[in-house]
Image (cartoon, rainbow, N blue to C red; front, side):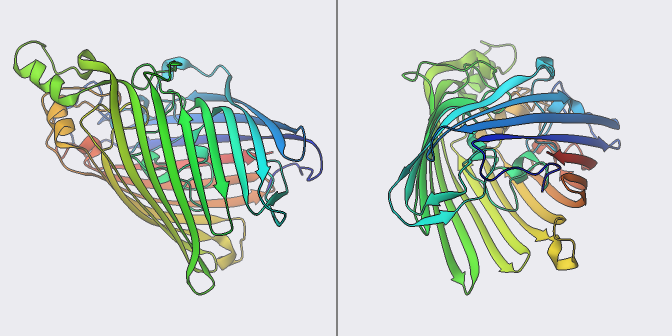
Length: 423
């Protein structure tokens, strides 16, 4: 549903979106705070993301897709202090500013493997309205891995669904990306009637949460593999299971070496950046499940784990996570373009990671100066109302226990309103 109608036959594609989120929180209890703490005093912040999507079909099976984006405003506490941060639209480095940038620029090639075809919904990432049932899809260029891996129908869209980083994505999936969430690489995907397999090889940032990518694949790269199974385990009710594995190679620091360097007196403070070594590997696994249980009602769940010895590098500071939630379609109450959802996620970190923070170490998101460890638990609810054509408004409420894994701080309540336009 968009403000302007889009052609289903034109070779060219033009569309866009504007997403504005206002979040705030009241003051909350905190025994102490550090440089990377969520601020204990009440505050508010507004973010905005504008995206222009363009594309051209060179042939029926070859497309060029180019998107330009601007991310402005800020998040509460400048997007630090939480592993499950409350606004997925926020750029983790506010000094980058709102100057427009190239978000995506890719060639999309479809390779038919069967004569039988199925309908395909046209959109910014694929312009075909009909595709072979069995096919290979290849994408090469600048892209976002989260557009293609670990997605599900009711818990992946920060513009119309949930807002939290670790609700819309698997927090333990430290996927290759620069500060803005994009990378350069190649993806290949095999699609069949009831299953799919996708693989991506992409560039890693030069430093944790960095904007510059390392173009030397021999020393730094991210490999991603996902198997998707679609089946009706319940009669006439679709089930989707996605199994994910990834491996990142980069100039990463070791939490244990940073701890030893501090305890031995070599370093005045624990500093993971001082103990980086090229060629370290961070690997992890993920599970993503969605199950339709009735018309307009879909349950979903995620779990994830990564090795936790090497520093969190590209997404967020989570080493293990578990999530459960539900998405509702407004057709149930006769407003077919409305939607609502509830989700609960519990995030954790490894022993090395928590010891590092407890001694006063800092990551690119966390660092209260000390730590009384507890799992970070987040409960999120939202309602999105459709006003007219491509105009939507949402109310969102998040409750966070142990922000930054610290039982000495919080809990904190974070309400939000969101305005979203698609054109």
